Length: 200
Image (cartoon, rainbow, N blue to C red; front, side, top):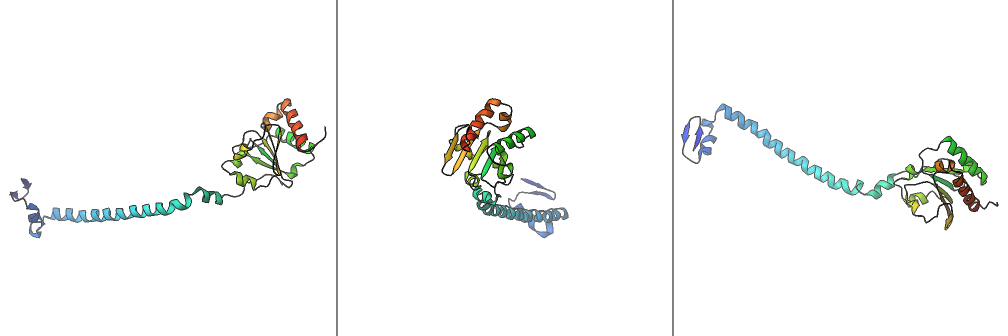
């Protein structure tokens, strides 16, 4: 049994009685009127959900593909003129003045100038492919320290020259470590003499 302001009704079809305009109270009329926008809002909310799904479906194939992202990346940035195909890859983001002085002496000692050399830090190579690295077309690669790049897959023994087709590799410790260790300096110099065919 349901209670109503105008009495008790035993009929189970009381909703039919309430739908008649003669018995619709002003307060109830306002409630019904307020309910209409709610239903409209519900239907309007459903439409954006579909559009979001459609947007996601069209969004995923384009930017979700990592290959497309790589194509948008600019070429690997190399410091220096890099005119002779000699590339120095170093662990540190920035080389100190002491390390740079050692590097200049080392490059001059093998018959080259720093103006001819290219410098790339590990952070620049991070998330770059081996194909992008090979596109630099370096003929001599000196890798110093730990590098976050697939170039580490080259089976070169530290302080020994490794040749792969037309490219020569020489891997060694970080330049900062070498600058503070005379034993490492001697090992590096011996390897450089072999790499650049310098007679002792």
